[in-house]
Amino acid sequence: MSKKLLAIDQGTTSSRALVFAEDGAIIGQGQHEFDQHFPSDGWVEHQPEDIWKTTKLAIDDALSQAELSADEICAAGITNQRETTVVWDRLSGEPIYPAIVWQDRRTASSCETLRELGHEPQVRALTGLLLDAYFSATKLAWILDNVDGARARAEAGELAFGTVDTFLIWRLTQGRVHATDATNASRTLLFDIHRQCWSDELLTLFNIPASLLPEVKDSAADFGSIAAEHFGHAIPICGVAGDQQAALIGQACFSPGEAKSTYGTGCFIMVNTGDVVVQSQHRLLATVAYRLAGKPCYALEGSIFIAGAVVQWLRDGLRAIPNAAASGDIALAQGGDAHGVYLVPAFTGLGAPHWDPHARGGILGLTRDNTLEDIVVAGLQAVVYQSRDLMEAIKADGISLSSLKVDGGMSNNDWLMQFLADQLAVLVRRPDVTETTALGAAILAGLGSGIFSDLTSVGQSWQEQKRFQSQMDESRRDELYQGWLQALGRIMH
Image (tube, rainbow, N blue to C red; front, side):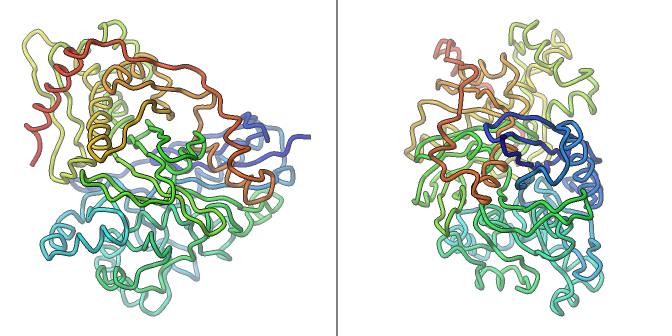
Protein backbone atom coordinates (compact mmCIF):
# COMPACT_ATOMS: atom_id res chain seq x y z
CA MET A 1 0.00 0.00 0.00
CA SER A 2 1.29 3.48 -0.92
CA LYS A 3 2.59 5.47 2.03
CA LYS A 4 0.90 8.81 2.66
CA LEU A 5 2.58 12.15 3.36
CA LEU A 6 1.01 15.35 4.71
CA ALA A 7 2.23 18.70 3.36
CA ILE A 8 1.34 21.86 5.27
CA ASP A 9 1.65 24.86 2.94
CA GLN A 10 1.17 28.04 4.96
CA GLY A 11 1.07 30.94 2.49
CA THR A 12 0.60 34.69 2.51
CA THR A 13 -3.14 34.70 1.81
CA SER A 14 -4.23 31.21 2.82
CA SER A 15 -3.25 28.10 4.74
CA ARG A 16 -3.34 24.86 2.79
CA ALA A 17 -2.75 21.19 3.46
CA LEU A 18 -2.36 18.38 0.94
CA VAL A 19 -2.07 14.64 1.35
CA PHE A 20 0.25 13.00 -1.18
CA ALA A 21 0.60 9.38 -2.09
CA GLU A 22 4.14 8.04 -2.39
CA ASP A 23 4.10 8.56 -6.18
CA GLY A 24 3.25 12.28 -5.82
CA ALA A 25 -0.48 12.00 -6.52
CA ILE A 26 -2.67 14.37 -4.51
CA ILE A 27 -5.39 12.43 -2.69
CA GLY A 28 -6.77 15.10 -0.38
CA GLN A 29 -6.50 18.83 0.21
CA GLY A 30 -7.90 21.70 2.22
CA GLN A 31 -7.50 25.46 1.98
CA HIS A 32 -8.67 28.38 4.10
CA GLU A 33 -8.03 32.06 3.40
CA PHE A 34 -7.45 34.54 6.22
CA ASP A 35 -7.57 38.32 6.55
CA GLN A 36 -4.79 40.66 5.50
CA HIS A 37 -4.27 43.75 7.69
CA PHE A 38 -2.82 47.04 6.44
CA PRO A 39 -2.66 49.33 9.51
CA SER A 40 -0.53 52.00 7.82
CA ASP A 41 1.07 52.86 4.47
CA GLY A 42 3.41 50.00 3.54
CA TRP A 43 2.53 47.96 6.64
CA VAL A 44 1.24 44.39 6.23
CA GLU A 45 0.25 42.18 9.17
CA HIS A 46 -1.36 38.81 9.87
CA GLN A 47 -2.94 37.61 13.06
CA PRO A 48 -0.90 34.56 14.15
CA GLU A 49 -4.05 32.96 15.58
CA ASP A 50 -5.63 33.20 12.11
CA ILE A 51 -2.60 31.39 10.67
CA TRP A 52 -2.88 28.69 13.33
CA LYS A 53 -6.64 28.19 13.09
CA THR A 54 -6.72 28.06 9.28
CA THR A 55 -3.78 25.64 9.24
CA LYS A 56 -5.62 23.24 11.55
CA LEU A 57 -8.81 23.53 9.50
CA ALA A 58 -6.89 22.86 6.28
CA ILE A 59 -5.29 19.72 7.75
CA ASP A 60 -8.69 18.47 8.95
CA ASP A 61 -10.15 19.03 5.48
CA ALA A 62 -7.24 17.33 3.70
CA LEU A 63 -7.45 14.25 5.90
CA SER A 64 -11.22 14.14 5.49
CA GLN A 65 -11.09 14.42 1.70
CA ALA A 66 -8.40 11.72 1.57
CA GLU A 67 -10.60 9.58 3.85
CA LEU A 68 -7.62 8.99 6.12
CA SER A 69 -7.03 9.27 9.83
CA ALA A 70 -3.86 10.77 11.25
CA ASP A 71 -2.41 7.35 12.10
CA GLU A 72 -2.32 6.54 8.37
CA ILE A 73 0.04 9.46 7.66
CA CYS A 74 3.71 8.44 7.72
CA ALA A 75 5.18 11.93 8.07
CA ALA A 76 4.43 15.62 7.65
CA GLY A 77 6.37 18.41 5.97
CA ILE A 78 5.94 22.16 6.40
CA THR A 79 6.52 24.92 3.86
CA ASN A 80 5.75 28.53 4.57
CA GLN A 81 5.69 32.18 3.61
CA ARG A 82 9.24 33.26 4.38
CA GLU A 83 10.61 36.21 6.39
CA THR A 84 7.25 36.84 8.11
CA THR A 85 8.10 37.43 11.76
CA VAL A 86 6.32 36.19 14.89
CA VAL A 87 7.29 36.67 18.56
CA TRP A 88 5.49 34.80 21.33
CA ASP A 89 5.59 34.08 25.05
CA ARG A 90 7.45 30.85 25.80
CA LEU A 91 5.11 29.88 28.64
CA SER A 92 1.69 30.72 27.23
CA GLY A 93 2.53 30.42 23.53
CA GLU A 94 0.63 33.66 22.94
CA PRO A 95 2.03 36.10 20.33
CA ILE A 96 2.93 39.51 21.72
CA TYR A 97 2.22 41.33 18.43
CA PRO A 98 0.71 40.52 15.02
CA ALA A 99 2.95 38.73 12.52
CA ILE A 100 4.85 41.30 10.45
CA VAL A 101 4.59 40.02 6.88
CA TRP A 102 7.47 39.75 4.40
CA GLN A 103 5.85 42.48 2.26
CA ASP A 104 5.90 44.98 5.16
CA ARG A 105 8.06 48.09 4.62
CA ARG A 106 7.89 49.79 8.03
CA THR A 107 11.61 49.24 8.72
CA ALA A 108 12.85 50.64 5.40
CA SER A 109 14.32 53.72 7.08
CA SER A 110 16.26 51.69 9.65
CA CYS A 111 17.70 49.63 6.79
CA GLU A 112 18.71 52.84 5.02
CA THR A 113 20.44 54.05 8.20
CA LEU A 114 22.43 50.83 8.50
CA ARG A 115 23.32 51.06 4.82
CA GLU A 116 24.51 54.64 5.20
CA LEU A 117 26.67 53.54 8.12
CA GLY A 118 28.41 51.10 5.77
CA HIS A 119 27.08 47.79 7.12
CA GLU A 120 25.65 46.31 3.91
CA PRO A 121 28.92 44.73 2.61
CA GLN A 122 29.28 42.77 5.87
CA VAL A 123 25.62 41.71 5.80
CA ARG A 124 25.88 40.60 2.16
CA ALA A 125 29.10 38.69 2.76
CA LEU A 126 27.62 36.72 5.67
CA THR A 127 24.01 36.22 4.54
CA GLY A 128 23.96 36.59 0.74
CA LEU A 129 21.13 39.10 1.23
CA LEU A 130 20.75 42.86 0.96
CA LEU A 131 19.92 45.23 3.80
CA ASP A 132 16.19 45.44 3.18
CA ALA A 133 12.96 45.54 5.18
CA TYR A 134 11.88 42.39 3.31
CA PHE A 135 13.89 40.20 5.70
CA SER A 136 13.18 39.29 9.32
CA ALA A 137 15.91 40.96 11.40
CA THR A 138 14.64 44.54 11.36
CA LYS A 139 11.03 43.34 11.78
CA LEU A 140 12.10 41.46 14.92
CA ALA A 141 14.03 44.46 16.22
CA TRP A 142 10.98 46.67 15.58
CA ILE A 143 8.78 44.41 17.72
CA LEU A 144 11.33 44.40 20.54
CA ASP A 145 11.57 48.20 20.44
CA ASN A 146 7.87 49.02 20.00
CA VAL A 147 5.96 46.53 22.17
CA ASP A 148 5.99 47.53 25.83
CA GLY A 149 8.43 45.44 27.82
CA ALA A 150 9.32 43.19 24.88
CA ARG A 151 13.06 43.80 24.87
CA ALA A 152 13.42 43.24 28.62
CA ARG A 153 11.36 40.05 28.36
CA ALA A 154 13.46 38.86 25.43
CA GLU A 155 16.70 39.47 27.31
CA ALA A 156 15.25 37.54 30.25
CA GLY A 157 14.62 34.55 27.97
CA GLU A 158 10.83 34.77 28.22
CA LEU A 159 10.11 35.21 24.49
CA ALA A 160 10.63 33.13 21.36
CA PHE A 161 11.07 34.29 17.77
CA GLY A 162 10.28 32.39 14.64
CA THR A 163 9.33 32.59 11.03
CA VAL A 164 5.97 30.95 10.32
CA ASP A 165 7.40 27.43 10.12
CA THR A 166 8.84 27.79 13.62
CA PHE A 167 5.58 29.16 15.03
CA LEU A 168 3.62 26.27 13.54
CA ILE A 169 6.13 23.68 14.77
CA TRP A 170 5.84 25.18 18.26
CA ARG A 171 2.04 25.02 18.19
CA LEU A 172 1.83 21.59 16.55
CA THR A 173 4.28 20.07 19.05
CA GLN A 174 2.62 21.93 21.94
CA GLY A 175 5.74 23.92 22.68
CA ARG A 176 8.09 20.95 22.78
CA VAL A 177 10.17 22.01 19.75
CA HIS A 178 11.57 25.46 18.91
CA ALA A 179 13.28 24.92 15.57
CA THR A 180 13.58 26.04 11.97
CA ASP A 181 15.48 24.76 8.94
CA ALA A 182 18.46 26.25 7.15
CA THR A 183 16.38 27.68 4.27
CA ASN A 184 14.15 29.74 6.54
CA ALA A 185 17.09 30.74 8.76
CA SER A 186 18.88 32.01 5.65
CA ARG A 187 16.11 34.59 5.11
CA THR A 188 16.38 36.32 8.49
CA LEU A 189 19.54 38.46 7.96
CA LEU A 190 20.88 36.76 11.11
CA PHE A 191 22.27 33.51 9.65
CA ASP A 192 25.80 32.97 8.31
CA ILE A 193 25.14 30.86 5.20
CA HIS A 194 28.81 29.87 4.91
CA ARG A 195 29.28 28.61 8.49
CA GLN A 196 25.62 27.50 8.70
CA CYS A 197 24.95 29.06 12.10
CA TRP A 198 23.49 32.16 13.70
CA SER A 199 25.96 35.03 13.44
CA ASP A 200 27.10 36.76 16.62
CA GLU A 201 28.17 39.78 14.54
CA LEU A 202 24.70 40.15 13.02
CA LEU A 203 22.91 39.63 16.33
CA THR A 204 25.01 42.49 17.70
CA LEU A 205 24.36 44.68 14.64
CA PHE A 206 20.58 44.26 14.86
CA ASN A 207 20.54 44.17 18.69
CA ILE A 208 18.81 40.76 18.88
CA PRO A 209 19.19 38.57 22.00
CA ALA A 210 20.36 35.07 21.00
CA SER A 211 17.92 33.51 23.48
CA LEU A 212 15.04 34.33 21.10
CA LEU A 213 16.34 32.15 18.28
CA PRO A 214 15.27 28.63 17.27
CA GLU A 215 17.58 25.70 16.65
CA VAL A 216 18.54 25.39 12.96
CA LYS A 217 18.15 21.90 11.48
CA ASP A 218 18.58 20.28 8.07
CA SER A 219 15.61 20.60 5.72
CA ALA A 220 14.93 16.87 6.18
CA ALA A 221 15.25 16.18 9.90
CA ASP A 222 13.40 15.35 13.12
CA PHE A 223 11.24 18.37 14.02
CA GLY A 224 9.25 16.50 16.67
CA SER A 225 5.70 15.27 16.16
CA ILE A 226 2.31 16.84 15.69
CA ALA A 227 0.73 16.13 19.08
CA ALA A 228 -1.95 13.45 19.13
CA GLU A 229 -4.30 15.94 20.79
CA HIS A 230 -4.66 17.88 17.53
CA PHE A 231 -5.78 15.20 15.07
CA GLY A 232 -6.15 12.03 17.13
CA HIS A 233 -2.73 10.54 16.48
CA ALA A 234 0.86 11.80 16.52
CA ILE A 235 2.42 12.57 13.11
CA PRO A 236 6.22 12.96 12.82
CA ILE A 237 7.34 16.28 11.28
CA CYS A 238 10.29 15.28 9.09
CA GLY A 239 10.75 18.10 6.58
CA VAL A 240 10.72 21.91 6.51
CA ALA A 241 11.62 24.49 3.87
CA GLY A 242 10.62 28.03 2.92
CA ASP A 243 8.06 28.11 0.14
CA GLN A 244 10.39 29.03 -2.73
CA GLN A 245 13.00 26.46 -1.76
CA ALA A 246 10.25 23.86 -1.42
CA ALA A 247 9.09 24.70 -4.95
CA LEU A 248 12.66 24.27 -6.24
CA ILE A 249 12.66 20.78 -4.70
CA GLY A 250 9.16 20.01 -6.01
CA GLN A 251 10.36 21.01 -9.49
CA ALA A 252 13.33 18.61 -9.18
CA CYS A 253 15.86 21.39 -9.80
CA PHE A 254 18.65 19.42 -8.16
CA SER A 255 21.53 20.26 -10.53
CA PRO A 256 23.40 23.59 -10.86
CA GLY A 257 21.83 25.76 -13.57
CA GLU A 258 18.32 24.35 -13.22
CA ALA A 259 15.74 27.04 -12.45
CA LYS A 260 12.10 27.51 -11.50
CA SER A 261 9.76 30.47 -11.23
CA THR A 262 6.82 30.43 -8.83
CA TYR A 263 3.82 32.66 -9.50
CA GLY A 264 1.91 33.04 -6.25
CA THR A 265 1.27 36.20 -4.25
CA GLY A 266 4.73 37.27 -5.35
CA CYS A 267 7.04 35.85 -8.01
CA PHE A 268 10.33 34.19 -7.24
CA ILE A 269 12.87 32.93 -9.75
CA MET A 270 15.43 30.59 -8.18
CA VAL A 271 18.47 29.01 -9.83
CA ASN A 272 20.34 26.09 -8.25
CA THR A 273 24.06 26.99 -7.89
CA GLY A 274 25.16 23.79 -6.14
CA ASP A 275 27.84 24.19 -3.45
CA VAL A 276 28.80 27.66 -4.71
CA VAL A 277 27.51 30.87 -3.13
CA VAL A 278 27.09 33.26 -6.09
CA GLN A 279 27.50 36.85 -4.95
CA SER A 280 25.37 38.71 -7.46
CA GLN A 281 26.65 41.94 -8.97
CA HIS A 282 23.11 42.87 -9.97
CA ARG A 283 21.28 42.87 -6.66
CA LEU A 284 19.99 39.32 -6.68
CA LEU A 285 20.16 37.19 -3.53
CA ALA A 286 22.28 34.21 -2.56
CA THR A 287 20.35 31.84 -0.33
CA VAL A 288 20.26 28.26 0.97
CA ALA A 289 18.28 26.08 -1.47
CA TYR A 290 18.19 23.14 0.95
CA ARG A 291 20.45 21.42 3.46
CA LEU A 292 20.60 17.62 3.65
CA ALA A 293 22.88 15.54 5.90
CA GLY A 294 24.55 18.77 7.01
CA LYS A 295 25.54 19.77 3.46
CA PRO A 296 24.03 22.99 2.08
CA CYS A 297 23.03 23.48 -1.54
CA TYR A 298 22.79 27.14 -2.58
CA ALA A 299 20.66 29.15 -5.01
CA LEU A 300 20.54 32.55 -6.68
CA GLU A 301 17.16 34.19 -6.27
CA GLY A 302 15.22 37.13 -7.57
CA SER A 303 12.18 38.19 -5.55
CA ILE A 304 9.18 40.13 -6.86
CA PHE A 305 6.74 41.31 -4.19
CA ILE A 306 3.57 41.54 -6.30
CA ALA A 307 2.51 38.90 -8.84
CA GLY A 308 -0.77 37.11 -8.09
CA ALA A 309 -1.49 39.92 -5.64
CA VAL A 310 -2.04 42.25 -8.60
CA VAL A 311 -4.89 40.01 -9.80
CA GLN A 312 -6.28 40.00 -6.26
CA TRP A 313 -6.16 43.82 -6.33
CA LEU A 314 -7.85 43.96 -9.74
CA ARG A 315 -10.61 41.78 -8.26
CA ASP A 316 -11.00 43.21 -4.76
CA GLY A 317 -9.61 46.74 -4.98
CA LEU A 318 -10.44 47.92 -8.47
CA ARG A 319 -13.39 45.49 -8.88
CA ALA A 320 -12.40 45.11 -12.51
CA ILE A 321 -12.90 41.33 -12.57
CA PRO A 322 -15.27 38.98 -10.72
CA ASN A 323 -12.62 36.31 -10.15
CA ALA A 324 -8.97 35.59 -10.92
CA ALA A 325 -9.73 33.37 -13.93
CA ALA A 326 -11.52 36.24 -15.66
CA SER A 327 -8.22 38.07 -16.10
CA GLY A 328 -7.00 35.37 -18.48
CA ASP A 329 -10.27 35.44 -20.39
CA ILE A 330 -9.97 39.20 -20.85
CA ALA A 331 -6.36 38.88 -22.03
CA LEU A 332 -7.43 36.35 -24.67
CA ALA A 333 -10.36 38.51 -25.77
CA GLN A 334 -8.02 41.51 -26.07
CA GLY A 335 -5.50 39.54 -28.08
CA GLY A 336 -3.04 40.13 -25.24
CA ASP A 337 -2.87 43.84 -26.09
CA ALA A 338 -2.95 46.48 -23.33
CA HIS A 339 -3.01 49.25 -25.97
CA GLY A 340 -0.09 51.19 -24.56
CA VAL A 341 -1.07 50.88 -20.88
CA TYR A 342 1.49 49.79 -18.27
CA LEU A 343 0.57 48.93 -14.70
CA VAL A 344 3.50 48.96 -12.28
CA PRO A 345 2.29 47.13 -9.13
CA ALA A 346 4.74 48.63 -6.65
CA PHE A 347 2.11 48.57 -3.90
CA THR A 348 4.72 47.85 -1.21
CA GLY A 349 7.80 49.05 -3.07
CA LEU A 350 9.90 47.15 -5.59
CA GLY A 351 11.89 43.99 -4.94
CA ALA A 352 14.74 42.61 -7.04
CA PRO A 353 16.64 43.87 -8.87
CA HIS A 354 15.54 47.44 -8.04
CA TRP A 355 15.05 47.27 -4.26
CA ASP A 356 13.17 50.54 -3.98
CA PRO A 357 11.05 50.47 -0.79
CA HIS A 358 9.63 53.94 -1.48
CA ALA A 359 8.28 53.25 -4.97
CA ARG A 360 4.51 53.06 -5.24
CA GLY A 361 2.26 51.70 -7.95
CA GLY A 362 1.14 53.51 -11.04
CA ILE A 363 -0.91 53.10 -14.20
CA LEU A 364 0.78 54.86 -17.10
CA GLY A 365 0.16 55.46 -20.80
CA LEU A 366 -3.57 56.07 -20.46
CA THR A 367 -5.45 57.82 -23.23
CA ARG A 368 -9.15 58.53 -23.73
CA ASP A 369 -9.45 55.33 -25.77
CA ASN A 370 -8.32 52.98 -23.02
CA THR A 371 -10.68 50.71 -21.12
CA LEU A 372 -10.74 48.80 -17.85
CA GLU A 373 -9.84 45.68 -19.85
CA ASP A 374 -6.56 47.33 -20.91
CA ILE A 375 -5.66 47.80 -17.25
CA VAL A 376 -6.42 44.14 -16.52
CA VAL A 377 -4.16 42.99 -19.37
CA ALA A 378 -1.47 45.43 -18.22
CA GLY A 379 -1.66 43.90 -14.74
CA LEU A 380 -0.94 40.44 -16.11
CA GLN A 381 1.80 41.73 -18.37
CA ALA A 382 3.45 43.43 -15.39
CA VAL A 383 4.09 40.03 -13.81
CA VAL A 384 5.97 38.97 -16.94
CA TYR A 385 7.91 42.22 -17.29
CA GLN A 386 9.08 41.91 -13.69
CA SER A 387 10.18 38.35 -14.47
CA ARG A 388 12.21 39.70 -17.37
CA ASP A 389 13.81 42.25 -15.03
CA LEU A 390 15.03 39.29 -12.97
CA MET A 391 16.10 37.28 -16.00
CA GLU A 392 18.17 40.19 -17.34
CA ALA A 393 19.93 40.41 -13.94
CA ILE A 394 20.57 36.64 -13.93
CA LYS A 395 22.10 36.85 -17.40
CA ALA A 396 24.22 39.82 -16.34
CA ASP A 397 25.55 37.69 -13.48
CA GLY A 398 26.82 35.21 -16.05
CA ILE A 399 24.11 32.53 -15.80
CA SER A 400 22.37 31.57 -19.03
CA LEU A 401 19.07 29.67 -18.81
CA SER A 402 17.69 27.72 -21.74
CA SER A 403 14.50 26.72 -19.93
CA LEU A 404 12.44 27.69 -16.91
CA LYS A 405 10.09 25.46 -14.93
CA VAL A 406 6.99 27.29 -13.70
CA ASP A 407 4.49 26.68 -10.92
CA GLY A 408 2.02 28.46 -8.66
CA GLY A 409 -1.58 29.41 -9.37
CA MET A 410 -0.83 31.84 -12.20
CA SER A 411 1.15 29.20 -14.11
CA ASN A 412 -2.18 27.58 -15.06
CA ASN A 413 -2.95 30.61 -17.27
CA ASP A 414 -1.84 29.49 -20.75
CA TRP A 415 -1.92 33.01 -22.20
CA LEU A 416 0.31 34.32 -19.40
CA MET A 417 2.81 31.47 -19.78
CA GLN A 418 3.02 32.07 -23.53
CA PHE A 419 3.63 35.78 -22.95
CA LEU A 420 6.31 34.79 -20.43
CA ALA A 421 8.05 32.58 -23.00
CA ASP A 422 7.77 35.41 -25.54
CA GLN A 423 9.33 38.00 -23.25
CA LEU A 424 12.06 35.81 -21.74
CA ALA A 425 12.89 34.05 -25.02
CA VAL A 426 13.35 30.76 -23.15
CA LEU A 427 11.44 27.48 -23.09
CA VAL A 428 8.82 27.59 -20.33
CA ARG A 429 7.93 24.18 -18.88
CA ARG A 430 4.86 23.50 -16.73
CA PRO A 431 4.79 20.25 -14.73
CA ASP A 432 2.00 17.72 -14.34
CA VAL A 433 1.83 18.60 -10.63
CA THR A 434 1.72 22.40 -10.30
CA GLU A 435 1.40 22.15 -6.51
CA THR A 436 5.17 22.01 -6.39
CA THR A 437 5.59 23.98 -3.15
CA ALA A 438 3.52 21.47 -1.20
CA LEU A 439 5.12 18.62 -3.14
CA GLY A 440 8.56 19.87 -2.07
CA ALA A 441 7.48 19.75 1.57
CA ALA A 442 6.17 16.22 1.07
CA ILE A 443 9.44 15.16 -0.58
CA LEU A 444 11.44 16.49 2.37
CA ALA A 445 9.11 14.67 4.77
CA GLY A 446 9.67 11.50 2.73
CA LEU A 447 13.43 11.96 2.85
CA GLY A 448 13.40 12.70 6.58
CA SER A 449 11.27 9.65 7.35
CA GLY A 450 13.21 7.29 5.10
CA ILE A 451 10.43 6.75 2.54
CA PHE A 452 12.71 8.23 -0.16
CA SER A 453 16.38 7.32 -0.26
CA ASP A 454 17.78 10.33 -2.14
CA LEU A 455 16.94 13.26 -4.43
CA THR A 456 17.93 11.40 -7.59
CA SER A 457 15.12 8.89 -7.23
CA VAL A 458 12.67 11.69 -6.50
CA GLY A 459 13.74 13.71 -9.55
CA GLN A 460 12.95 10.90 -11.97
CA SER A 461 9.23 11.26 -11.24
CA TRP A 462 9.01 14.88 -12.54
CA GLN A 463 6.77 15.03 -15.61
CA GLU A 464 6.14 17.90 -18.03
CA GLN A 465 2.50 18.74 -18.68
CA LYS A 466 2.96 21.53 -21.26
CA ARG A 467 5.73 23.63 -22.78
CA PHE A 468 5.66 27.13 -24.20
CA GLN A 469 8.16 28.36 -26.77
CA SER A 470 8.80 31.96 -27.77
CA GLN A 471 6.74 33.03 -30.79
CA MET A 472 7.12 36.81 -30.61
CA ASP A 473 9.26 38.80 -33.01
CA GLU A 474 12.35 40.12 -31.22
CA SER A 475 11.67 43.74 -32.19
CA ARG A 476 8.13 43.56 -30.75
CA ARG A 477 9.43 41.86 -27.61
CA ASP A 478 11.94 44.60 -26.99
CA GLU A 479 9.51 47.39 -27.91
CA LEU A 480 7.06 46.21 -25.23
CA TYR A 481 9.83 45.82 -22.65
CA GLN A 482 11.26 49.26 -23.33
CA GLY A 483 7.81 50.70 -22.61
CA TRP A 484 7.86 48.84 -19.29
CA LEU A 485 11.27 50.25 -18.38
CA GLN A 486 10.03 53.78 -19.11
CA ALA A 487 6.97 53.23 -16.89
CA LEU A 488 9.20 51.81 -14.16
CA GLY A 489 11.40 54.89 -14.28
CA ARG A 490 8.37 57.13 -13.71
CA ILE A 491 7.37 55.53 -10.42
CA MET A 492 10.73 54.82 -8.80
CA HIS A 493 11.62 57.00 -5.82
